[in-house]
Amino acid sequence: MMTGHESRDGQNTVSGEDEVSAQTGKPLDPPNLTIIQEGIALADLSTMIRKQPVCAVVQGQKPRVVFDEIYTSMQSLRRALTPNVNLHANRWLFQALTEYLDARMIEYLTWNDDATACSSFSVNLNVSTLLSPEFLELGELVREKLRGSIIVELQLVDVYSDLSGYFFARDVLRERGFKFCLDGMNHHSLPLVDREALGFDLVKLFWHSDLHDQLDGAHRDRLHRAAQQIGPERLILARCDSEQALEVGRSLGAALLQGRLIDSLLQDSATPEEPFEDIDARYAAAS
Image: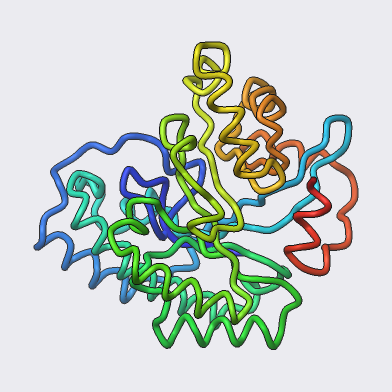
């Protein structure tokens, strides 16, 4: 039901469609990072939280919500705290910011009843956060009160920067019922990923017009083989904002879609459906 970062050209406690626009302003530096962290500690984070569903979409049928991703809108955070600072200009300082946001997001999810209303959710975190006592406590809370799973979304660069730490945390958390999603893939990186070897349940591919061009070009077979190896029922095409994106999703066989167009289709559908019992059942229903 939730996450944290942003479409990251450094992305972590964030994801989402309103996070894609380029930022201007002076680069984030250590003094500004301190100011932002102090502001976050005092801010009402609920005003910056956004939610976006990931849906199973079958042509001719209305979308069916599989789980919700909840994240902190970095655009809202920037407007509220440092409107003249480009948060993404320094990758490593942005990483430090998202690690700080992890803690606030976990606090929000632990204590916000509305945020824990769904049966399954995703939260975008750093590897360094995964075995924190606060996150493990959130996992216990979800297991006691909800029927679904927490899906941890991770960036590939973060995983490879601490591969042993990731594998250890993955094994510990999997025993506690957590699922894992590899976030932020593009047409360049998708064929390079071995989902099963890394132990991810889902892979999220970002839609871009270049992806459509690639599927019409020399790399078509390579991308289709990558999608098949990942498993179409475990592939999410995110940032879908056009019919062209849906066409690409169908071409790749992606059973799960996310984005503004999917939000619109979901709003147009008439009545809510009963949630699936658990995330594994949802995978099956999406296939």
